[in-house]
Amino acid sequence: MVVMVSKVQIRSQFDLMNELTSLLIDELRVCEYSKAEYYQLPDINSVDENIIPESIPVQKSTGEIAHRAILNSFTDIYKKESLSTRVLKRHPGLLVLKNADVAALTNRIQQVNKAKAAFKECVLAIDNNDARFEAVHNAVPNLITLAAYRKIHFQSESPFSVRFTWMHKHATKTLTKKMALEMLDKSAGYRNPRMIDQQKWQSLVAQEQMRVASLGEKEKLRIRRPTRVSPQVNVRYTAENRYHVSAALPFILINPQPDVKLGTLPDYQKTESHPRKKEYDFLVDRLYLEQVDK
Image (tube, rainbow, N blue to C red; front, top):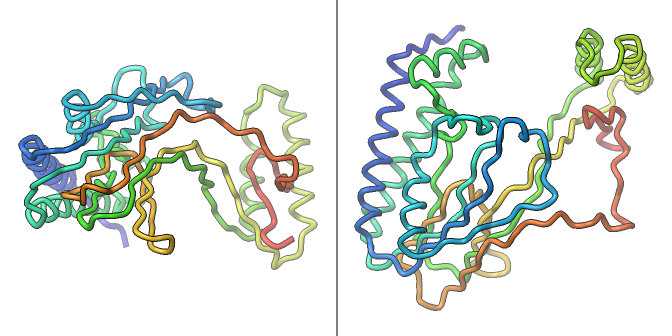
């Protein structure tokens, strides 16, 4: 079944999300706060988007400057000239509110997040990637959809601590032997992706195909691609009761106890691999393709 999503539907969902976000920002602007910290990360230019950084410097601001940056970050959803649209700008920060109307503010943030989810659902109802891109950019020119989808994380039950950390993740996708061979068949037809001549490229892909073809039919495979390191918020109540969420947007802590422990986001520095750490043995290095149970 083909779902027809019109430009008008996308635009109206977007306008609702935008309107609710503006209301939240207005409400946060007049809320008292005991702490505002914003951690400025370097901009990523389009030309550098494939470079994985070894280190990321963090520039911390506090008080009114941080407060302004935090509120502005909730509407940073449009393309900017020369900046990457594939590696999104992240806005780690912490806004600690005091004397806020917990029920009203919680309700407003939940409304915003619900509208973001509805907008995402509306966009993803268009199956074809190209059609989806065209529909969104006709409805809302220059929008970065992934930035618009970002959830605003908050907590109103006072925790023991709120700290920041850098997290390494992997994008994992499981596939069958047949799917892996189909993927390699497509690769064979690509033109010169690594600046090597076509003959060498096809011979490389042929070796990869042989390695996969030699596996048993029921072999489980997965692609385990490393993604960029990203800032996270760790919220802890007890050793067992804790959770972490993305720090792509500032974290809002509503009326916590005065003794809550608050951390800051440190600079990121890639650590040297431990000599005994497991080295991944990929079937196809360039695709991060590996067997699941070896």
